[in-house]
Amino acid sequence: MRTKPDPHPGPPPVKGGGELSVGWIGTGRMGYAMAARLAKGGADVLAWNRTRAKAEPLAKLGARIADELSELASRDVVFCMVSTWDDVKQVMHGLLDGAKRTPRMVIECSSISLEGSAELRATLAARKIEYLAAPVSGNAKVIQAGRLSFVCSGPKKAFDAARPYLEMMGKGASYVGEGELSRIVKICHNVFLGVVTQSLAEVTVLAQKAGVSRHAFLDFMNQSVMGSTFTRYKAPAFVNLDFKVTFTPYLLRKDLDLGLEAGRRFEVPMPLATATRDLVQSLIGRGWTEQDFATLLLQQAQASGLALEPENVRIEDGLS
Image (cartoon, rainbow, N blue to C red):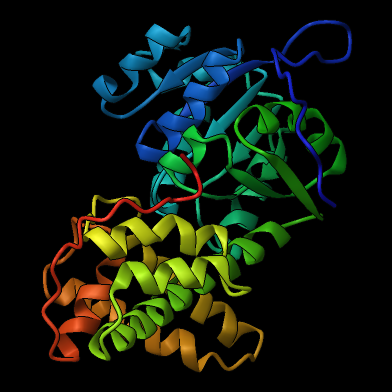
């Protein structure tokens, strides 16, 4: 079920005429951009990050910054956007252990396993806290462009209450059912992300080695039936070799591992995902860990005996 955002979002009302107070955990690349949209939209945001300095710029947008994670326990709803399941467990302990009050709802947006999400749901249920699993599609630039999308699972009433806040951060949210169904959707999404990027690298290198410039090839691809939001978004990096990080090889490897684990669990063979995971591991083995995962293009070119140079051509990314 797809929902459309209000074209004029403001602080969303809740039953009784008030607004939900929001706690925000995690202000890395993704978390900061998401919390910033809430703050700019007028939501009552109290943010916490392990390194406080990364959260402090949110104060200029109207958010308040918490000194202690436990301060967020009194908020109506708490969002969490961190890197790994270990991080999720750590911050949830910090939020809830010893707390005299608890949030009405926790909305967890990180990429974690089905098992981890189910464990968190049980922990929160024991404290009578509603839980919405709400992983996302996008990165910081996508968020800034208002194009972030959520996939959500859990109680429908929790989704309905959270929806106005989700829509403040992007173009809408899809509700896929109860339990951890959104987690498998997100895992499938990120497996596809890796496989598509490797495939795009292969055909781009093939076209260039045959004599076609990267910008000409990708201009055609992006106008063809095979073009997509993603191929358009990655075109400038492929053409001009600007690999400023949006998503690291480490994080992509983690998500491919989650996908392969799910494949084993549900008895689904995944040969392309397996091959892509090995290629991402090669990036990490080369030490290419602090650049964007789109460096799969460079690795493919090297394997093909091709030395790439920036083409220095302006090409649209579909977001600007």
